[in-house]
Length: 505
View 1 (spheres, rainbow, N blue to C red):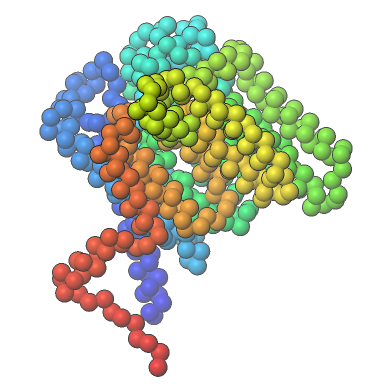
View 2 (cartoon, rainbow, N blue to C red):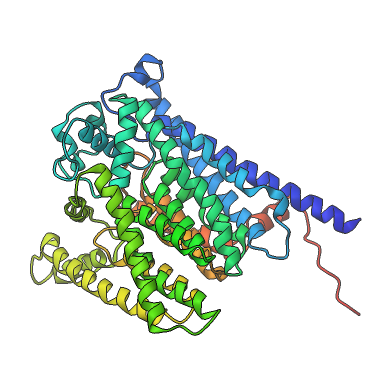
């Protein structure tokens, strides 16, 4: 009876935690209407009588609602982690997939959060529909409400996305036209398969390598950073993450051709997914090695299949869209983003800071040098990782995760949603508590220093210190329940004593 009571209390706690996260998601969605990336030059708020949400007391109310919602989601995520990362519990009856969709649902209908990238996607799709090439011309060549709403720094730049995603944006705008609101909602719908594929792939990747499927879902899909940025944003990474993780799930379970087709599609969405492809060689050979000895002919055939299938899929999408390889030029525009989240930028800032008393070094002079060094170091690391992690399927999977992490740390610029490249594949491993705490701390920090209106607080010292403190508190809460001892203090104030377990004897 006592055991049944504990199970009932545990189930009730879990359900309350999941409901708290859902309430937080709803509050984030509602608060976003006043403080997030509202379309510019669009009369919808005025026509509906809701323009008061964007200024004065209305904006303050939305801000409070939004940040209380973020807090609820983070607290619920941390509490849920204690439950789902406990492998002694049975999580089969929790219907976690449904709860992921429930947390995501309110974010499907809110104003774009933390970024105006979705307006850029639509602007590039409209540009393509108007007869221009997004790989040669910026959205500013086709002025209209979509271009008005995007971040103007990107209005003159070309698209860095693969042909599959450009085709998707073209289809969306062909249906919604210049209607900004419908375009945002439609874009979220076409990116939604990425979430569904992730829901399918993440548990399979985890179980294949002996990790916890529930812990994998917690790490990625219950993560407020992932949900708010990728669904609420929305961002192309949602689709790429789903296709990438599904492709790897097929590869590791022996369906190599189907997996490579999906990986080719992932590369056709965003070129970063191509980091995973060379490691498929070692996984495929490891599967052959389980049946017989691997010979030179096996290596040649597998290598030819990997290159042939991936290139064929990418070539097919390129031919369908008919824009060639112009997306390569768009990759360089990321250099316009300058923040502390990559090692080359950190080093450039430190060099200018140390040199300041002696010589007036400009960041724009130092940054290209540190970025070039970072790119060279990254190239070496990727090659070393590929060769070093060749011995087994598990080694190769770890190599992909480490390679994606190296890209995030060493590339010229990084944004919060880029970390999904790492997380969606790290689910294959049982992460130690300190790593989970680090993920929680970084996720919480980034939810604060990046603001819902696309501004950034990373160069404002008081706000950055506050974000660091809150991120540290969130990380500490993973390592230890109630790190500030608030619960114990409350019990003392109310005169409630914590029972001390009796000693044997």
